Length: 180
Figure 1 (cartoon, rainbow, N blue to C red):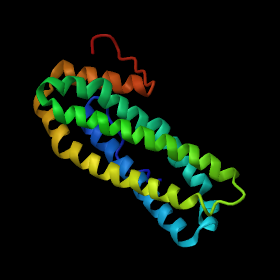
Figure 2: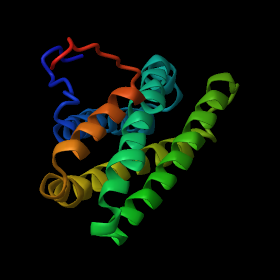
Figure 3: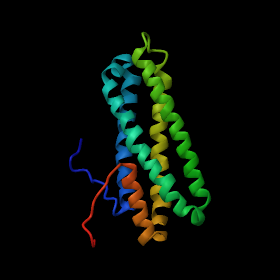
C-alpha cells in the first residue's frame, strides 16, 4: 500500500473521481498480474493469491461500488441533459461491469472449494483480464470526455451536492463549526 497516494477530497468532487479512477486502475493492474501468474503457473499461483483476490473483491464491493454510485446517482444525472448518449453508454457499461464482477466473485468462491480447479481457471482468468481491460478503456473515456465536461458544466451548489453525496456513500460525516 502506498501511504503517499492522493486521498480524495470530496470538497473537490471531480478531482476525487479522478483519484478513484487511479485507485481502480492500480487494482486492475493487480488483476492482470495475478491472471498472468495463474495462466503461467496454474493452480499453485491461484492458491497463493487467495487473500489478494479477497482484497480485490472487497475493493470492488466497497470502493468501486461507491464510485459507481457517485457517478450514477450524482454526476450522471447532473450531466444527462447536456451529454445524453455518452452518459447512457457509461451506465450501460457499469451494468456490464457489475455483472462481470458478480460472476467473478461467484466463480472465485467455487474455485476456493474446488478439488480440481484446472478446468475452471481458464474462464476465470479470461473474464478477470476482460474486466481489467474494460476498466482501462472505460476510465479513459470518462477521464477524457465525461470529467472534463463536468469541470465545465458544474459549479457551486452542484459540486457541493456531488461532494455531499460522495461523503454519504462512504458514510463520512463531518460537523463543521457554525458559520462556516
